[in-house]
Image 1 (cartoon, rainbow, N blue to C red):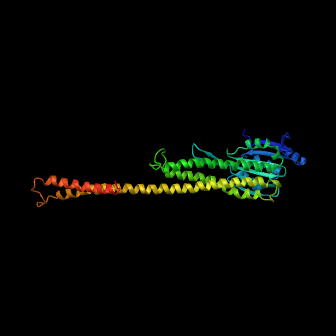
Image 2: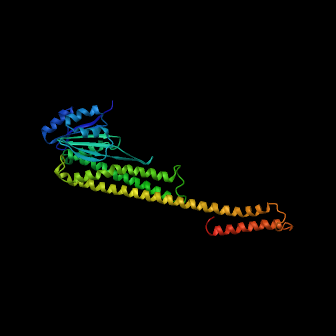
Image 3: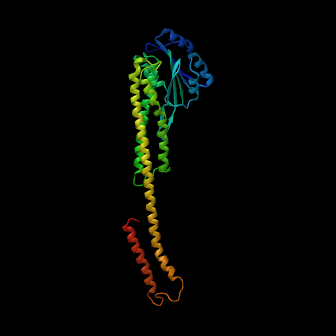
Length: 333
C-alpha cells in the first residue's frame, strides 16, 4: 500500500521526541507544551486522504485545493490560521538534457508544519536529517522548517544552473565549430538549441516567481514566521537572485547562439548557391556553342576548315577555364 504520510515527528526544544501515534493527539500535545511543534510530511495525497489532515489542522479550503491540484506557481499566501507556501524544486537529467519540476507545499501554523510533495524531486528526508542535526535551528519552531526547505531548494537551483551552463558551453563550442555543429547528433542543431531553451524556460517558471515570496519572508510582519528569521530568509533571497541571474543569462546566451547559428546557415546557403551558379555558368558556355553548331545551317563559320571542330572545342574549354579562374578568384568555388 502507498505510504501517504512519509514521516511524522514531534520536536521539543529543537530535538525529535516520541509523541502520540495519532497526529491529532500529537498536535494537541505540541500546543499544550508550547515549546514544541509537529512536522507532518505527505506525498501526493488524494482528496480523501488529505481531508482529515485539513480538518484537524484547520487548513483553509482554498489552500487545500491548491495543495491537492498541484500545478501551482511559487507563491506565499496568508490565511487566518496558517501560512501557505508553494515551492517548485528542479531536477536536471544530463543524459536526456531535460529539466523537470516537482511541487512542494508547506502549511505553517500554530505549532505545526504540514508538507505536501508532488513528484519525485526534492525529497525532504535529507532536509529533515540536516535539521535534526542542528537543534539550535529547530528551536525556532515551524519557521526553521520553512527556511531549511527553501534554502535547500534554492541552493539546488544554483547547482542545476551550473550544470546547464556546462552543457550550454559544450553546445556553443559545437555550433561555432568548423562543421557548424552538424556532427555528433542526429537531431538538427537548431532543434537542439530550441529544446534546450525550453528547458531553461521551465527552470525560469520555477525560480522566477519565487523572488516575491522570499522578499516578503525576508521582511517583517509575516504571520507564523519567527521574528528573528529575517536574516536567514534574506540569505535565501540573495541566493535566489543569483540563480535567477544565471538562468536569465543562459536564456539570453541561448537566443544569441540560435541567432548566430541561423546566420551561419544563411551564409552557408549563400555559399552553396554561388557554387551552383558558378558551375551552371561554366556549363552554359559549351552548351550554347554546341547548340549553335547543332542547328544544321548550311553557312556556318569554319564548316569547311579541317581544324574547325578542334578549334571550337578549344574555344569552349578556354572560356570555361577563364570562368573557372574568375569564380575561384572571387571565392565562389
